[in-house]
Amino acid sequence: MYVLWNGNIVKQEEVVISQEDRGYQLGDGVYEVIKAYDGQLFTIKEHIDRLYESAEKIHLVIPYTKDVMHKMLHDLVEANELTTGHVYVQVTRGAAPRNHLFPEPGVEAVVTGNITFKERPVENFEKGVKVTIMEDTRWLHCDIKSISLLGAVLAKQAAAEKGCYEAVLHRDGIVTECAASNVLGIKDGVLYTHPANHFILNGITRRVIIQCAHEIGLPVKEEAFTVEELLAMDELIVSSTTSEVTPIVQVDEHKINDGIVGDYTRRLQASFAQRIA
Ligand code: PDD
Image 1: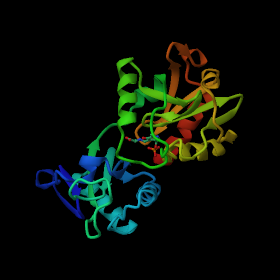
Image 2: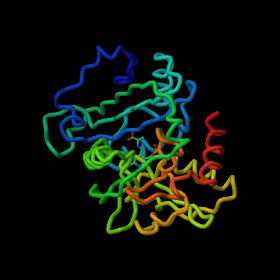
Image 3: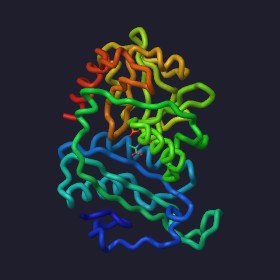
C-alpha cells in the first residue's frame, strides 16, 4: 500500500513517525475521512475546507495550500488504484519533546494519509440499523474534527457490545449526534437535525442530505430535538461519509415506524445515490 507522508507518496513500510509526535502523545491534531466512489473523491472540496477550518480552530498551520493537499490526496488514490473506499488524512502539530504548550516555531505539522478499499454498506441501506442512546460525555468543541476521539471510541464500543450500529448521544435529554455520525429525524413531513454549532460536527453528508431534502420538497428545520421526540419520529437516519443515508429502524427496544424504512428515507437515499453516480 502507498501512503501519504509529509508531502510524498511512499510505500507504507517507509514511513517513520516520531515517538514524540504530538498526535501520538497528546492527540493534538485533526483529520478527515473522504469517500471514493469509483476512484472519484466525493465532496473533496468540502472535506479539504473542513480540514483547514479544524486546523485553524486549533491554531495549527498545515504546510500546504489546499490545492496541493487536493493533488496529494488525488495522487494517493491513483497510486493505490483505489476504486470504492475511504481516504483518511490527518495532520498533527508535529514532533517535539512532550509539553502541552505548542512547540517552538519551526516544528512542522506532520501530514499522513492512507486508503482503505471498502464496498458501500448496502445491506444497512436496505434493512436499516439498530442504535442505542447514551449520554454525550465528549468535550464542547465537537465542531472540530479532532483526532482525540476517546469519548467517541468508548461510546461506539459500548454500542457495539449491545449489538448496535451506533450510539445516539444526548446532553441533558437533547440529542446532539452519534459517536461517529450525525442523526436526522423526520416527523410529520419535516426533516429535523441539530443545528451546526459546537455540539456537533457539521457532517458533509448531513449537508448533502439537506440539499437532497430540498430537492425532494421535504422541509428542513435545523433544530435540536429531545430523546423523547427522537423516539416519536416517523423516520430516523444516521449519516456520515461511511454510513451515507443509513435508516435507523430501532432505538434500543423501541421500533421506529414498526421497524420499516420510511418513504422519505428511501427518496433521500435515491437523491443521494444520484449525486455519487
Ligand atoms: N466520522 N459526527 C461525528 C462525530 C463524526 O465523527 C462524523 C464522521 C460525522 C459525519 O461527518 P461526515 O458526514 O462529514 O463524514 C458526524 C468519520 C466518518 C469517522 O470518524 O470515521
